[in-house]
Image (cartoon, rainbow, N blue to C red; front, side, top):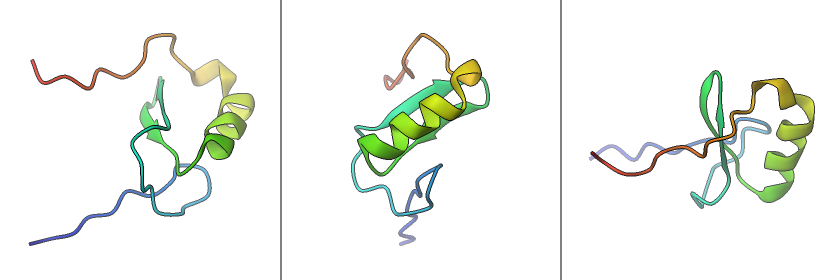
Length: 58
């Protein structure tokens, strides 16, 4: 069994919770904490899409 860990798209730390993500023009970005998510939003506001990522399997 492979244990693939997600890493924060800002700082590179392991993402422990799925609570901090953004839908961008480059795809879904995931973050380790609210701070990293907020900093990414400020630095890349032109890439952020209004709709949250779709987490449902249709």
